[in-house]
Image (cartoon, rainbow, N blue to C red; front, side, top):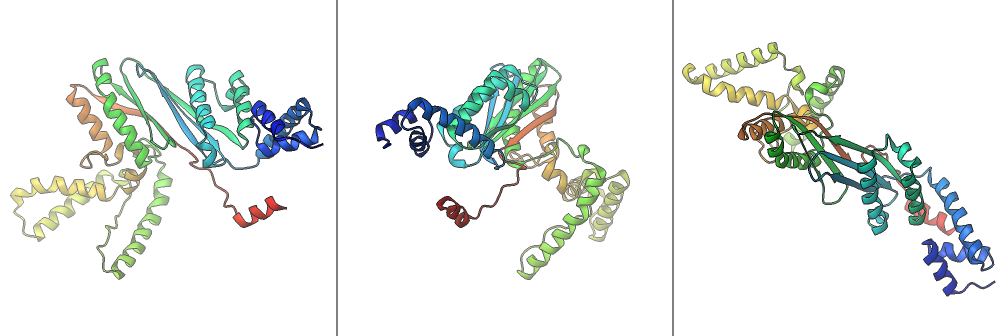
Length: 349
């Protein structure tokens, strides 16, 4: 039978299904609205099963922070396309899911999916019409002597929460602003661990040769272009800077000062700065991956750890960042490179 535009519009309004799917459902159901609705529900289930094999690497992050900074939750919900991530329905789904997880603290993603809210989540996903999934979430809690704050980037794709143990309630309260700044730093600088002490020695050893060789090759190209060369370090992490290494570095610095004819009486003013430079030059891995050892973006004369120490000291106390969580949408997901021409051909078939 012929299907009218009014029927399609009515079915779409009732189910929020795509227009062409509504038309096909009505054709398959001989115009029976109830049967067409059931057909769409069945197809929605079939589509969900089919979507399971597809890759959802787009999406949005979400964050909820308690008014009293006693708790913060971050989540990541993935979609297949950025287009869907910009959909208001999807954005509301992220906000609502973040609030649900913040309030009820499911044990894991499976527990979330099995909850009453999880059923509503699945229903919303079927309406949106592509693969959407809650990928991960985390929550940090704070007591009266713990400072806690967070940040979500303007694109809503990166969310961070930072936690610091403090000596007093006064210090904890006063540290919240700088923790937000450190969360912004974390968003931009992408640390993967808290401190260089978290690195496995074998990992550092394995990274050293490759990174140094890469710098040497880069310098070959810079030399060819007659541009300034980059420093090629001997080490890449403070983990490698043993007492013996540091003693030798100091000996080498003093020998060079002597060679340059610098008066020995001023060495004590020069050596500390050159030792600091030696450490900076030989800790590239720490600066790249370890939050506390990174140069603080708001004052690159300080590491993040030093900036935290200075902020706490200005409040008359002490503080140490003990934990951070950084979620970036799609991080670690291998995206499929689609052949657009092939995809169009498949759609036309």
